Length: 140
Length: 185
Image 1 (cartoon, rainbow over the protein chains, first blue to last red):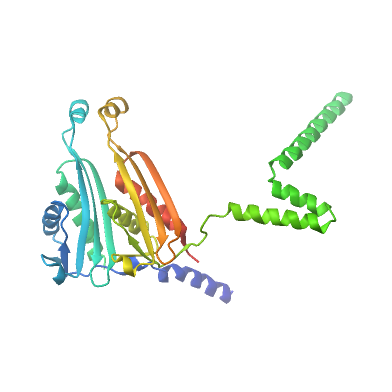
Image 2: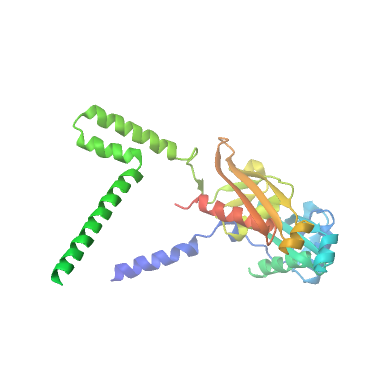
């Protein structure tokens, strides 16, 4: 009986120790973050990070940074068909960001977002990225 | 009355026996040739015939195996090569699906490399008019290569018609299927 309880406890404990490498590394609060150029999306992301009050320090020099945010964003503006048939002027937006630990050279966080008929264009996707990044930092 | 019952019982019995015969013959037909050969070889007393059947079974087994059966070990360092922006979606998909690998930014530090391509076909006016859909069609393909040996250990392609979340859906599909290919032992 005791042996079976011990075996059960050991089996239940396995998932606790079996964490993957990416999940183990989190972004500490007050880290220095460099945002790499993303064809203008970096400006929206900076604004969103400030608006959402992320506890990170944005630096303009990559050498001084602990983490780097790279990514891409795409905008699909509403065409004539969408405007006439659906009466919809909003664009479709999608973006994806990756946060890399510069010293270790490993990716610690990544997030992608897709917004159809985005009310505020790139601003919406940037704020979604910032919001989820904040959750990752504060979940430490 | 009892005669009728007896007749009915015999009729049912005959039907059942006929069905059994049909099943046994179909089963023999459905069996792969290797199994039927081995069954025959068990009856045969000659050792040469059994050897030949064994070798044929082995060759068939080898043919059914994938080209590279090596699994990607858990905790491997993986580099995701640029794919015109799609690499970010792949990384996000991998992290979202909690694939037990470590993604590195430097190729030299990596054991495996993910390469691939992605295509997006946006909804045209006809699709919007007739199907009332503005979702795009997405297709992507990746392959995982072991850097040291240069062998492809995993490959996957995805095609999503009317993808609700665009490239995000394709990236997450890749992450999901890559998770299944990682050796967890």
